[in-house]
Image (cartoon, rainbow, N blue to C red; front, side, top):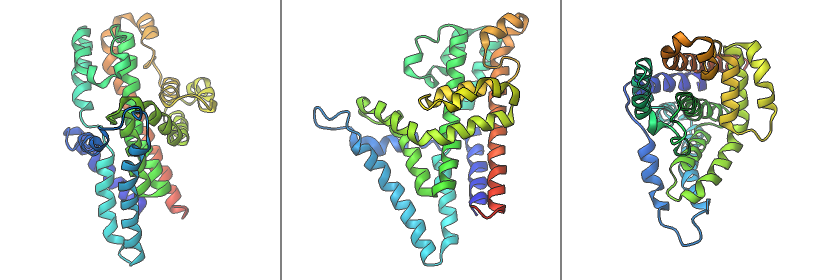
Length: 295
């Protein structure tokens, strides 16, 4: 049933994303509000945030375990679907990317920047004044968001069940939304530990779903590097797996100067297609694991 549960949750979540509905970011923010007040000198402490994430994860895992223990496993499946729908998703991205691509096509880079500035990391917004830098920053943020809110959750749900899926999603939320900014870099480091295997698995999947020869030339060093961070691995792998310089705006502008106005929309379409094909590969792999009796 793991495959069926995930498929239902994935289809429902994609539909909600297209409607820009049911974002759980505000729910996490309210839950983390309990950590908004700390003693002086303990702003960088991460124990409180980890506790707030571990509690719902353990409760969900315990609930599923008890239902299974008493022979009521079937009622747990709708609960898992609901939780996965809430944990996954990138609502609002489509509503930002479409006007961005339209503004890029019109050559209005200032309007394009205004459409997506909220999606860019705060540290990169100032540097995103050049079209090339802006687009690469946006592409990196998009790929990372989809990885964290779909692939990462899918991987750990299959490995450890719904409790582990909640835990890893909570860690991502801590790195983004924990009230004490001094602690966020530490949460990012914790996320890197849980990202290490799934991000490299996704990197390999990019090669399978995209240009394998290009991936072999670019990404082998990325997945072998023990200290390479998640965004770097994702961008190197995606760039190698995409053809037509989809993630190389500088080179695209030199090779195809007459098509520069189409680059923004074309590149985003290529990135999203690669991510969709990669999820299809993961679903097929999960189906094979189910058939083999491993899952």
